[in-house]
Length: 452
Image (cartoon, rainbow, N blue to C red; front, side, top):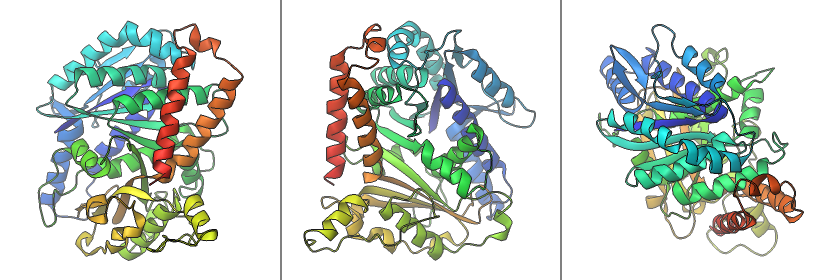
């Protein structure tokens, strides 16, 4: 089943390019540490999901949307190199005027004005799929076009394709601030997506920046460096895996399988990704990994809410089954331990069947109303990813994002209480009641996750 990707705004289009490039590069890699038959099946499954062929050339199943043409033209040019993959030159929509980092302008002006044209492009791409798994929508939440227009289009997709799954991959802004109204834009985007999307896959710019600096040893970090780390993490999730233990068949419904295992209740739809190992290409040939070592570190990353395997807090432990005494133990759970609602572990590479997963089946990792049998799943393939002999990705639905969300809501509320910049939104039809609705919904989301 195919996935149609919608790339929105500068951020969405730049990340989208790196994702497709990572998927294609990995699928063509001969260093898969597996048989030729396995490699061919893997390549065919990847192509079916994310590409279609025209005259022997892989064409990304994507629609590119931005209100300014510069970035889209750059991505089309980069993707047009001989011997690689391409975008469909007709599957793009751009205008001459951006949204000026104003969510209301993207949502209330660009959305209604251009939705029909964009939806026609999406429909044409859907019609080229033999079977549609759903939509993967890549966008930021802090700007104007990606966030405002992105929220509007996600609602339209829900209206027009109610039976197709929608996953929004959202980029959380730097805590230090890129845009003065980024907190307003973020809460408006998140509240609207929570009503219309099936799952939100969250990446925090601050966390990815640290991965670039500490794990990838990048000196001068650019947006492309950050986007390539994101693409590696997304590729490690979306590339094919076997459908069951000891099966040689690959899963055919990528989004449906992810949702089934990770979103057990519509009130809980925030997902995060951790991958291990992740390092620079120059370090890779000199590194060796065992499944025991990788999974021990990944488990501790999960429970201590670490985004990378450097600087893990090994003092954090799951709470004991009995009720904790008042004081230190409660505080430890509240402040440090990351309770999970659901976890999906994806293992790729050599001797994958020998990996011991019992550490992730510990009931103490999960909320009391969902046991490990329902909350934990594992997917595997002996085919390696991106030249890593062994690698693991963990997609989690849990308390990892409570702090950043609570912080964004708090900052936005402080600005709203003093009516700062509200006029920039009301002049395009976003009223104070819309802000209050967003605050109410997101405060409920925070409370629900805190009570896991």
